[in-house]
Length: 458
Image (cartoon, rainbow, N blue to C red):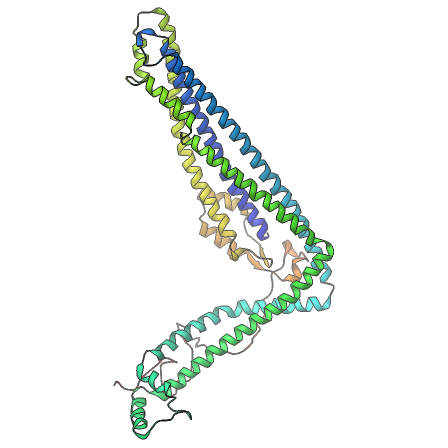
């Protein structure tokens, strides 16, 4: 499995999680509209019972109905625009995937053609070995660098030692009068200057050698990579891959624009979900004005007590509508809870997607030979049966650094792992018997292993 495939699976997982949010939000919006419509219908029917004397009359009911209609029309237009934007995103993504597959195919052809070039194959082999050596030595380089820096700081804390070093004590450059020489000799014995200076110079030399070896490895990789990549680029260009990249960039721009448009529409729809749109506010205010003194439930109870037989039929319908309203209110609460859950799932999906996009799991020389189905693993992660750390561990165990020369060859399961050869660019001695990997340095009488050490106190 390549990094692109891995990222594609997590992208689809994120889009599915987002789709569940949008579907639930749309259902919530519809329920809110239904709630308002039922309340308006109830007040309209109650208005037909003259004995109840509602605060406002038919004019306000017409205004409520008009506001609700306008609200629904506005939402319908926004949902239509959103569907179009999402369709544009999906279509552009599909086109990009097809074009990327074509680019990958040309890349494979370019690599296969270069395999016939002995010079290219030799450079690739050297690059493989250089990268393997880098991976083998990088941790030791960092540890040695930190060790030297830590021990060298000790030589800066003793002011007498720094003073003597500043006057080049013990070297041909030391120039002092007889009295100063006598005092400096006495001070030097107190801080064990000559032994400590020898240790410090050994640390400096060791640090410089460590940096030089690392720079040598880095330069070798850089030079070989430049040469290999230049030949690969030329082979790709000859096959016409260079013309594909502008198309990929253009498609990515279409995707980004469509996503921005969809996000802007979602923001507008958000005002309807939060009941902040002007049509809802107007309809709600009109209904509130009509029901200032009593709730709908109370008005229905009063309506059932009126002597007019014609009111009984109205009351029966009112009770049916009121039951429906109660059910809608219950569904509203459930929909709001579902949206909270789906938003949590979406954040979880994005956390996974962002994690697999990091440098740890990307690159042309990376391949994943997993012991489990990744899509099933993602499903388990989304149901919280698997943690993000466990997913990362599975990917880490399955990660392979592949040889450039074998990327195109397509050996077992697509790629072959590069062997790490024991290549050495120099010797850096570290005490393997020490628990903290301290550097073994010639101490010249000092037992500090490179640390600053005095023979007496001043």
